[in-house]
Image 1 (cartoon, rainbow, N blue to C red):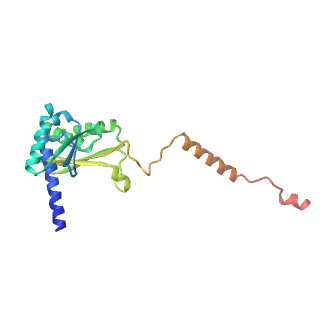
Image 2 (image 1 turned 90 degrees about the vertical axis):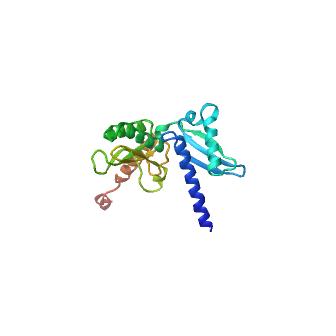
Image 3 (image 1 turned 30 degrees about the horizontal axis):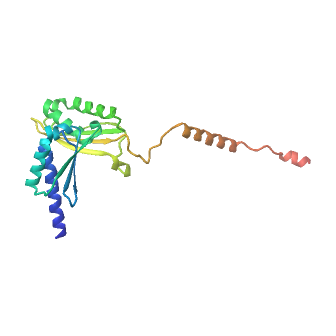
Length: 228
């Protein structure tokens, strides 16, 4: 019974997040986080366009709160906005923006749109970026295209810090899947070696130490020992 309740709870939470995304629209928000407290439900929306979500005098927030209260029977939902300072480093916003570009300009422009998004992310300071497009681009048969730049971990503990997201573009030839992976500039990489003056000085001192140890010490030869 506990497992069924957990599955039902997670389904309702997922449908709530999808409802919020559909109400706000693609490309306007990144993540939706729901926290539960005795006072009520706290819904945190991460976005780079807080003005569009809040509306004049907070009317859009009030409408969204009322929809959540009626549809999902929430007692006291409280919607908060978390502003994203640098949208070019958010994988979901980049994926949605690329999907909207494909819907607007068509799948034939996919290369220019992908390279433009890639350059924009790298200019923002990302350590590495990967963009994957899958669908009927540009031929009639489905194909996968990969655009990558920089350093990006795929496995291990370091891969957990990679921000991953996906989106869907509905074009005339068909549906195009968009996947974006971004390694942020502040990511802690355990296998990353930073070469600075301190490290260079230490390497030079180790080399000099090894060279002095290889030089044989001056002492008496066998002939000199025999004469004595």
